Amino acid sequence: MTVAWVFPGQGSQKIGMANKIIELPNAKDRFNYASKIFEKNLFEICEHVSEKDNLEKDLNNTANTQICLFLVESVLLDSLKENGYKPNYIAGHSLGEITALYCADVLSFEDSVLLIKERSKLMADASKGSMAALIGFERNQLELLVEETDELVIANDNSDSQVVLSGSEKALDNISKRITCKRFIKLNVSGAFHSPFMKEPSIKFSKYLDNLEFKHPNLPVISNSNPSLSNEPDELKIRLKNQMCNAVRWRETMNVMAESSNLHIVEIGPSNVLGGLGKRHLKEVKISQVSSSDKINY
Image 1 (cartoon, one colour):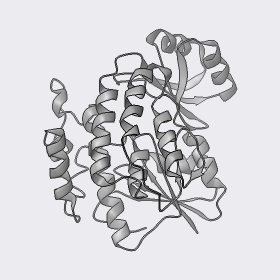
Image 2 (image 1 turned 180 degrees about the vertical axis):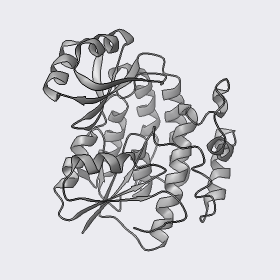
Image 3 (image 1 turned 180 degrees about the horizontal axis):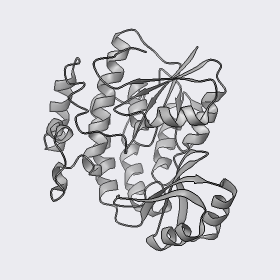
Image 4 (image 1 turned 45 degrees about the vertical axis):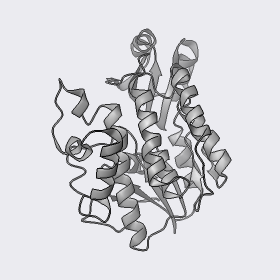
C-alpha cells in the first residue's frame, strides 16, 4: 500500500485543537518555544473562543492561525514517526507545505517557526483584494469567465467541484452574478492570497527564503505550485517561493497521488478537509485522519 501524509492549511483550525495534543511528547515545549518567538500565548489562543473585537487573540487571524496549525500538525506527525509510521511521500495545502518540508527534514522545527512568523505577518498585512469559495460549478464556464475577468484568478483548485477565487472586490462581485453554481461564499480574509495581488509580499518572502538552508528531503514532497514529486532541496525552495503568488493546485496533487496503487491518504491535523476532498475526488482510496493523542495510528 502507498501511504501519503497530507497536511492542511488555513480553514482547518478548530477551537480546542491544541488541548487534544498537548500531552504528546514535546508538545508543551513547542508551544512555549513558539509563544516566545511570537510574543503571545499560542496555546491560550487555540483554546479560547475568539473575541470579535480582539484580533490579537483570534485563532482565525492569519497571524495566529498559521503557527497554531503548524504546531499541532508537527506534534502529531512526530508522534506518528516515534510510533514507527512513515509515509511514501507527503504534501501540504498552502501553509501545510511548510509542515511537509519539516516532516521531510528539509527544515528544522526552529527554522519552520521563524519562517511561518515571516510568512503569516506578510500575509496578514496584505490589504489588496479578497477571496471567495465556489462550490458546484461547471469547470469550462468557470475557466472561461476567469479568463474574461480582469484581476481574478483561481487561487485554490481544490477539486472538480470546489475552488477558491482571489481577486478584486469588483471582479468577485462580477463573476458571482455570472457563474452558475451551488454556492458562492465570500471569505473573511485580509487579502487575495495565492494570486498576483501578493506580488510584493511574495518578493519579501523570497528574499527571506534566500537566506534559509533547505536540506535534502528524506521523503519526496509534492508542492502546491508544481504538483509533482521532488527530492531536490533547491527545487523545493523555488516551488515554495512561487507558492504565495500562484494557485494551490490541490486537484492536480490528488491526481498525482491517484497514480499510486492501493493509495492510503492520511490527513494529519485538526479537521478532515483534505480527507473529504480525497473521498469525493478519488476512487478506491483509503482515507484516515490523525488529529489527537487518542489515536496516533492508522
